[in-house]
Image 1 (cartoon, rainbow, N blue to C red):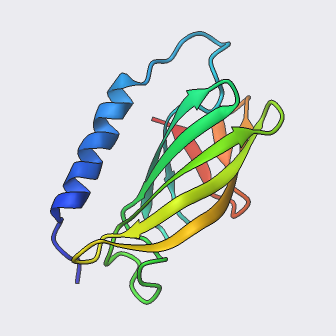
Image 2: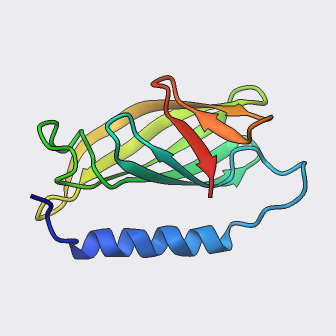
Image 3: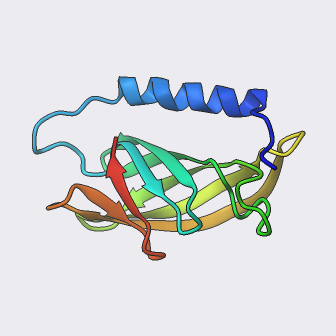
Length: 139
């Protein structure tokens, strides 16, 4: 049984939509990481991510509408979000850690901290990939 949207989830969705509007795309020399991204997680849930910053240092925000980390038995029961910092390592890689991962139980709860992440940029496809095989596309 899917839980009704709670206020924090609605706020997060609004922030994601507003940030997608504020992120601008410039010519081919744009930063390969910065922007709004979407992906389907390996559990089938939908994920959205915004990457801001530049010059090799980035702020990331991720929203997963079915966070397995929140309930492995029924990953679609609770949403999750993560925020973190990362840095470029070479022209096509970014790595860092999610400072905090939140599950939107009632009330919301921080469930993990300092979780490492890495993404590889595929210039020909304009996509990001994760070691898990998840592929992110620009929104």
